[in-house]
Length: 179
Image (tube, rainbow, N blue to C red; front, side, top):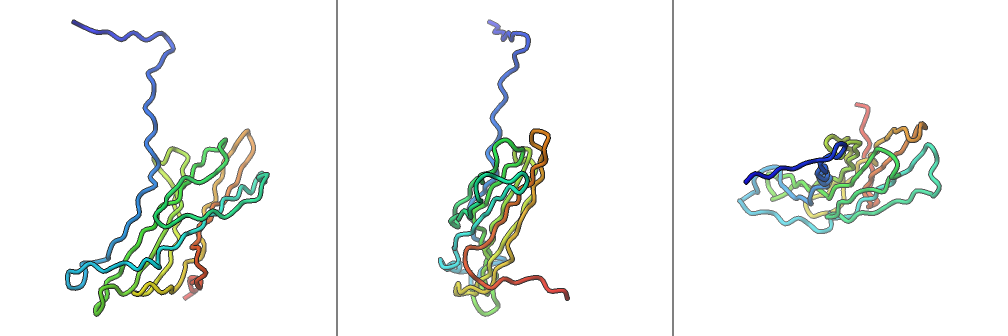
């Protein structure tokens, strides 16, 4: 028995849904094997929220932009104008413990990223903000806020949007030196 599928002219098979965006998962790793083979315990105090700010600069958006806070293990799509091409997301935290010579961990770095794409995240641009902590979880420093500037044309008019990510904690900001 043979089955045949007949499509009317102009009918196309339904396209598969796009894959989900690459939000990722919370991750903790070490930069080498643990000292003595024992996995160190990550201090919970290093898991602080990060904040993201989305501002449509041209044309001006109707309501004032607000900082949105994201818990460390949370990743999410960001709220951008639906009629534009850009879509952005914030990733969950990535924690890196650097192994010390005489201690299980010398220090910890927590990073979060914003990723933006116009093609369903087949490709994307990314910016990252980091915070540093000592081996006990005491704060050391934050990177300056990181931003992406998105350009789009909607209805024949230019649209410029800025997305900024920063650590929520009020730590000293370390700026690159001119050395």
